[in-house]
Amino acid sequence: MTGKRLKTGSDFTWKDIEVGNAVSEAGNAALRRTGDWRSQRPILDKGKCNKCGLCWLHCPDAAIKPLEDGFYEIDLFYCKGCGICANVCPKEAITIIEEEEK
Ligand code: SF4
Ligand code: SF4
Image (cartoon, rainbow, N blue to C red):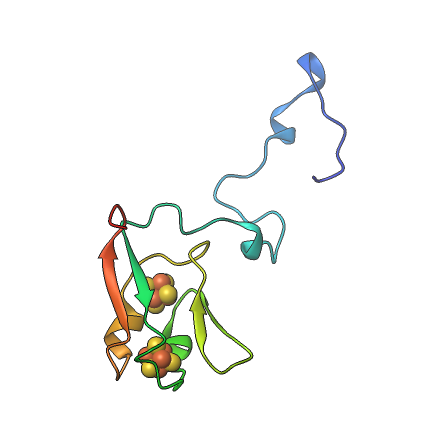
């Protein structure tokens, strides 16, 4: 919410239209569900993971979170399914599957 009063009818002019393709409120990316259009997703097998953190370092969307026990989890709210984490994992602990697969 911008806190602006909503205008209607002749009260509303072109000056009230939000600028297109612009970030009007900076720092709001964390609020956006950006993983919705993913067609593939990563599955992390903790049994193979050596806790090296390479997946966490390379994920371009910061969708991999470190856990207190040293392992990592993938946050599908943000993950785009790019597969970079699976490519950099030295233990082949991450598999990319089609989104419709269980
Ligand atoms: S698939 Fe891509 S976006 Fe998703 S967790 Fe791996 S590196 Fe990050
Ligand atoms: S890159 Fe692979 S082995 Fe390293 S922390 Fe991530 S899942 Fe585990």
